[in-house]
Structures are given as C-alpha cells and as structure tokens.
Amino acid sequence: MNRKTIRQLPLHFMLLPGIVFALVFSYVPMVGIVIAFQKFIPVNGLFGSEWIGWDNFTYAFQLPDFRKVLGNTVYIALMKIVAGLVVPVVISLMLNEIRFQAVKRGIQTLIYLPHFLSWVILGGILTDILSYEGIVNQLLGSLGADPISFLSRNNWFPYVLVVSDVWKEFGFSTIVYLAAITSINPSVYEAAVIDGASRIRQMWHVTLPGMRPVIVLLMTLSLGNVLNAGFDQVFNLYNPAVYESGDILDTFVFRMGMLDFQYGLATAIGMFKSVVSLIFISVSYWAAYRLVNYRIF
Image (cartoon, rainbow, N blue to C red):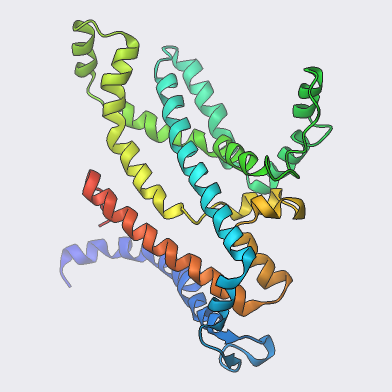
C-alpha cells in the first residue's frame, strides 16, 4: 500500500456510514420485491407464499382507480415541475435587482424558512388557513365572495398542492439561481451599460443567458420526478372527498398495502413506479450530460 493510499484511508472510512445506511435501507429491502409476484401471506413469509407470476401487475393495470391515480400523479407532478422552475427564476431575477443587501438577505431568509418545516407542520397550518373559518375564506367573505372548501373540492385540491409545494420549496431553488447569477462576469454588464441597455434589457440579454445552463440542468434533472407528486404533502392534506383528483401512486400504494392488506398488489404498483422512475432518471441524466455536460462521475 503506497503512501497516497494510506493518507486517503481516513477519507474512505468516512464513507462507511453512508455505505452501511444505503445497504440497510435501500438495497436489503429490495428482497421484498418478490412480494409483487406472490399472493403474499405474512405468516408464510417471503419464500413460503404462493407464487402467482405477473397476476398482481395484470390486476393492477386493469383497475379503473389505477389509471385515475396514475393520471393524477403525472398531472400534479408536471405542474409542480413547471411551477418549481418558473417561480424561482422570476424571484431570483427580482431579488438580483435589489441594491440594499440587508433587504435582499432578509427576503431570502423569509422565503427560505418554509423549506425547513415538515409537511406534518405545514399540513396543520394549511388546514387552518384554508378551512371555512380560515383567514383565506375570511378575506373572500370581506370581498363579498362565498367561502370555498379548498381541501375537499376536487377542482381546487390539485392547485392547492402545487401552490403550497412551490411556496415551501421555491426559496431553496432561488438560492441556486442567485448563485448562478453571481457567476456571470461583471464586465458583460458593463459592456451592456455602455451599449445603452436598460435594466430590463440587461436582465433579458445578460442575466437570463448566464443562468441558462443551470436552468436547463435543473429542468432536465426534474424529469426524474414525473411520478413523484409528493407523498408527505398529499398524505397530510388529502381526504376521501378528494381521492378523485388528489390520490397519487404513493398514497394509493399506502392504502392498498397498509389499510387493505393487499401486499402483493401494493408492491407490484410500487415496483412499476420504481421502474418507470428509473427510466426517467436515466434519461434525465443522459440529457443533462448531452445538453450542459453535467455528469455525476
């Protein structure tokens, strides 16, 4: 063993907790995939239950609820992806125009704070705010409008999910875009000023093109989340009244497995989601490499 390897041994040992964590919580549980191909009975165990092949998958794809849930998942996830890209870009451009650093940092802190709150806490807050007696309906009442049951109306619930998700996460994404803006060469702005460009022109012709690689990168990587509509958020906000528009694959799997005890069916749907997500993630990383030369290794 050479000296360089000996010097790097502490760094390799630092990887051990992460490797052990990944093995225990990510790879060992993959043994349970066999449940998707069984009529699983807990008392018989993983290898004692009846093997039924692809029957769970066939049954799942024939369920009318499954098609609806899949549509909800893609629809909500795509809206979150689009809104999660547009809103932080706009906010970062606006923040970049603020010349008072104290005000800028204060706004950054305020919009970043919700990122640290769990959906258990935010779910309770949103339930109170959007209830019939909540502040939103009180405001609507003061304007002469009828109260709206945001969390029990199918035509409102998906948009509540999207808006609340953007509100929670856009502060974090804004920091990424602000970092991209700071990497733009100041001399480009100076050249634009000499050419007589206004602040709007500078934003359009200098700032946005300078942010383009990061925007394209995050947009491509977000493709891997097409089937991830946010279990924590939906689980803490939805109810049977909005299953039609708010039920997603993750919550459907939870109900099938934990409440209806259809373990084989739930595992089959979860495996379907994992395989499709793997394909999308692979495509997104390939596209990120081709478009902006991004690579993990």
